[in-house]
Image (cartoon, rainbow, N blue to C red):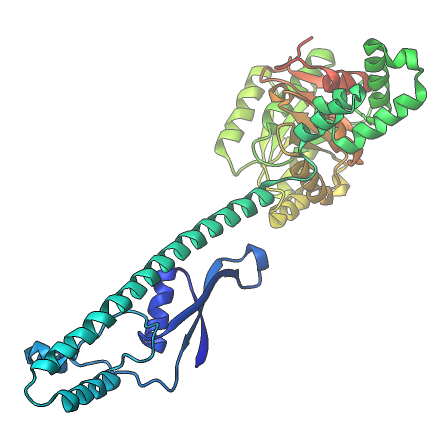
Amino acid sequence: MQVRVFEATDMASGLKMVKKELGPDALILSTRTIRNGKLGLMGKPVLEITAAFDANYPHTPVDSEQERMARHQQPENTGNRRIGGFRHVVDDSGENESQSRAALANNYGPSGSKNDRSLETVETKQQPDLQNEVNELKDLVKNLAGKIAHLAEKEDTAQQARQLKIKDSDFGNRYNAATIHGDHILSMLIDRGVNVETSRTIAGFLRESLTDQELGNPDIIRSAIMGTIEDLIQVSPPSFADRKDQQRIALVGPTGVGKTTTLAKIAALYLSRYSNSIALITIDTYRIAAVEQLKVYGEIMHLPVDVVITPEQLEKAIDRHRDKELILIDTAGRSPRDSFCIEELATFLTPELNIDKHLVLSATTREHELLDAIRRFQSLGITHTIFTKIDECANLGILLNVQIQNANPLSYFANGQRVPEDLLEAGPKITAELIMSQKEGSMHD
């Protein structure tokens, strides 16, 4: 007996392969689901079928169409009949059947009456038994196919669940664990979006710094948390007062974070507090709407707007507005993963131009994407960070999470669409208040 192993996508195709390679007399020994390929457990499930056949057993060749036609024209009592499917016995071939018929003919004579009755008796005994075994095999194969499909589906579902699980962002589980253990300080921080590592550090510091009586007072705890956050946050908004030399600020960042609107807010804030000695420059020629938007803001505030396409044109525009106190430069949004476009932007914002580069980020972005953007844009020589859309966040612990890993200080927060009202200068206290506040929506003075 020889044993072969087959791999197929499902039971039906596997059985066809076995029948084609080993013939209809093959015996199925076992079936199981495996995962092959470089991905290991994440690979596509494959059905493995182990089958066997007797190499010494004479197999009946596949009949041609002419032979089948000729056989159907023979009398039915020749006994040349086969039962299809996979055999479970080895004594029912055409050769053995012919030998049995010859022996019966010799024993019972040429009359044929007793011989025919004997053949009928043999076939009557063998055919039901074989048919029953074939039916049982069909039922077994059908049940195995159903079980294998169910197990494969269950395994795929479990694998997808494991892939979708994010280790460090499951705030719900951390919150429940902290609540169960009764650590209300940890719960308060995690509830506001502060990651678990920072929350544990702050909670441990407060437990060491405060007395048991103070730890029982929620107001004292909240005040202590805010003081700790103020110490952790680094801020540095532009200092416009008493500045004698020209200040140049460029806003850079990913697409759709609100750079143009934020630039208009800074211009309007400077216009209302200091003077109208401002020039607006845009190199965002990728979006016509962005150029038109900045021109509209310039017309409303009666400020000049220059559109430049090359680094040389930017240098000439800056030189042309050398009498201005403040030059604000708008840039096209760049994907953090598009290193070519970031390098192209670097050819405009060269160190020789003495431009402060503020990286504009949306507070609605996931934490790991924010950190990735900070890392990739750092090649431009970023000096400050601006967070926009903070009015769209239910909690702002992400400001602390990112700032702890960001060397650049915060300069502004944008908390709405209004110009210039929805712009906040970053400060330690206001940052701590934003993080610890449970109010939703924009915060206006």
